[in-house]
Length: 232
Image 1 (cartoon, rainbow, N blue to C red):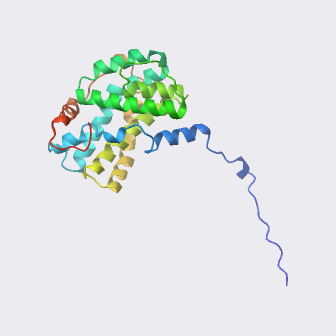
Image 2 (cartoon, rainbow, N blue to C red):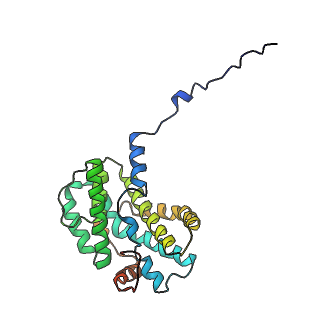
Image 3 (cartoon, rainbow, N blue to C red):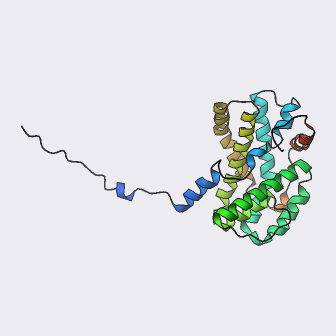
């Protein structure tokens, strides 16, 4: 006995399903850990704090990261957002960042990351920015995202995400937490990062402020460590 052919019902809405835009692909590439920004060479002061006994367990690590996010929002994000909106002021903002970043270790790290990111953006995406004397990371990142027409909000969140990911990656390499625990904490700390970003996204360069001086002191001790994995 022959059975009737199976009728396949197609969902007419399937053809209308959204597909990723070209900007989605760009964002995924920028967020990929393989994108050569040099960020994983730095621990944002975590290594020095750990070696000095200030980070002893997970709760200390979380407090360190939360303080770092708050400082990122007040001391760095205004440079990113201003450079994004006014890329033609890159040289001015770069000089301001250099003067504001008095910690020699943080200053050096900012220059190294900024130059690495700009070199990658120029070669991969043909980003063209005005000349700047130091090429600090924050203004270079903001101006580059503006050139690529990525929104200010997405730029800010990407900046926060990159910082959070890099510090937790450093925690794994220092054996403070394992890879799975780091991912758990990244997920749990996302709301804190979003809260700080939301509170600080309207700040201007006139509002630049250092909110966590202890982080600055620990990072400044990096060069005096007997042995170290990171540059900052």
